[in-house]
Image 1: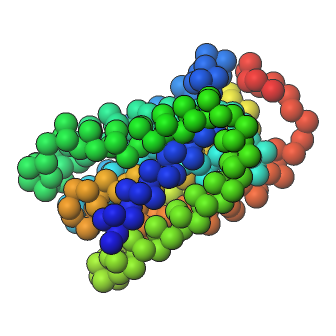
Image 2: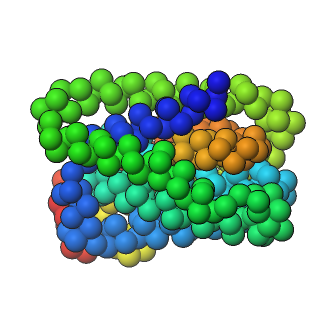
Length: 291
């Protein structure tokens, strides 16, 4: 059952992301170049390598290590957009990073899966899986529904906007149910490895948000942009990682994403609440940051 529900759930979630996007969201790259550059470097490079380092430090099994890297390579999620809004962060930057990472994951996920398999699994755990085939499946379950959503919005904007709030709520409920279902299905495996994988997932989440926030501040971005970047790196689209892990046919690949989800929502909410108070002051441009 979960083999059917995961792709369908992800299709709807990515379609819903597409409903919130226009070509202007991608043009923001030109208007917020520094924020987008720092955020995307964190998402596309720092995040998967940080996941690999955490896997090594916590001595995870090869399968769980690959699963953690898969989670690290997953794009940012719409929950990061919502948390950024609640934290009074730079929501436009958050939406732009989610859009870009959702498109680019068709390249980055197969790339980092291959690297993780070579390092942790000696090229044998997913070595018999054609990476071109993985890329094609990632396109089918992420990029295509996202583009359909964007097309629907461009042709029926009023319809899309009228239903967006309801779809957002449905997407959140679906995401929670998907995580619960994945955790339930893999319960024995999670229990057997809970101490290691829980600590590794918690460490990855805290390190990801801390490092990305620090990197944003290091290049003199303001607190609002740093908030968006930190939440984008801390809150991944776990459904992508769960679905790809399931498609690869190894249940252990799904475990890190399921456990990580338990922490990212809680830690993200705590961080958003704290930053909401910090970001409540007057908006002043910092280093050319848009206001």
